[in-house]
Length: 236
Image 1 (cartoon, rainbow, N blue to C red):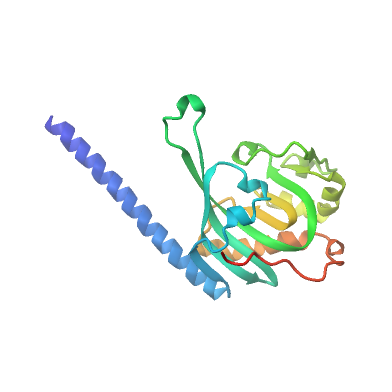
Image 2: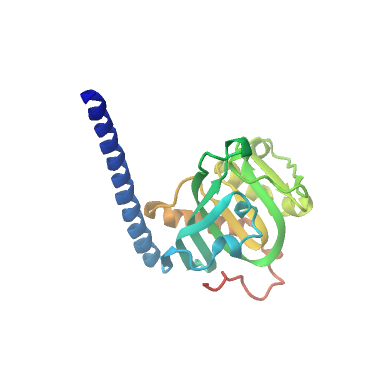
């Protein structure tokens, strides 16, 4: 019996140590994100001042799960564009026969850039990772490209395939082949990028640069008739 209580005590101590280590890591990450946002001329808020899942409910990324919320929100203008960078959590409830089990929670990091024009809907995911993203709506069609390297790496779906081919010209295809883990969504004046890793201070600037690079791959002729660039919603 003594060894049982000893093992139980060791297990509880290890769990407390893991939780404490995670708390310290997250606290340092929050401080680092705030400092890096300030250095880049952006604003940081631990709590979501925009109600992002509701404000951007038109994006397919926010259609999955329950208890959806954003935190560690970085916002402002970067390199001339209105941007958001944030952590996002949602929960998936178990199937009905297993409803007694608690929901499974997921955390990921997303970037948003406001475009200067309202574009048709496009979703791009690496092949073999469809189960990691919300199901694509039925009105989307597969888009084929004359690039074996791109087509073997990415799956593209759009409500307007011809427009998607304009957006994904040879330069865009080559860029995505060079960066095989990208996942993006375009809907209206919103460009969303799903990061392959959780946002952290050391990578924030390079991640924002990647976001702007993707926007600048889009042909400028798509935006020439628009007078004013998109803005993020007003804080709630």
